[in-house]
Length: 156
Image (cartoon, rainbow, N blue to C red; front, top):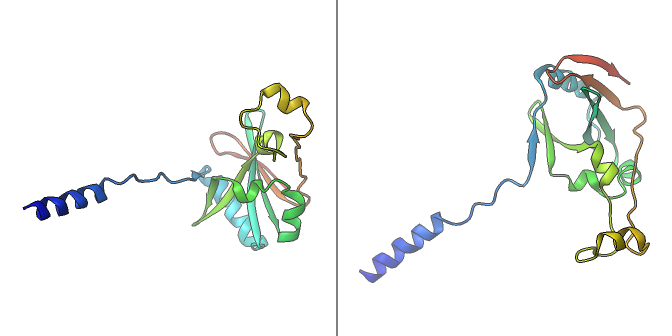
């Protein structure tokens, strides 16, 4: 009887193990916007590294398709924001990394661990370093759209 209870307890505990939540955040754009981006991807073809950048522009949004190779990515992604992001945009049947403009404005790579360091000291002591990165994506495709999904202007 003890063996039976032991087996049932193990089975129960195994089923109650902590389920780790999905560590990424998935985004879906309005239907017409997704279709236009999918068409652009099909027209251009995918390069080794493809990701999107989303920013707010007044009441509207601007989504930019960025494609590059590994060497270009090293130059434009100094803090590995693209490879470390937990946000992914669904286009067609594939997820692509999604960055926000605030990733570049506030994202950084500290020189030292800043945990436990006062806020003022992080900004006044240069040894902690708070570098910023503001890449420019030449030749990228951008699309402006409203909150309800109306496409306002595709730009190159």
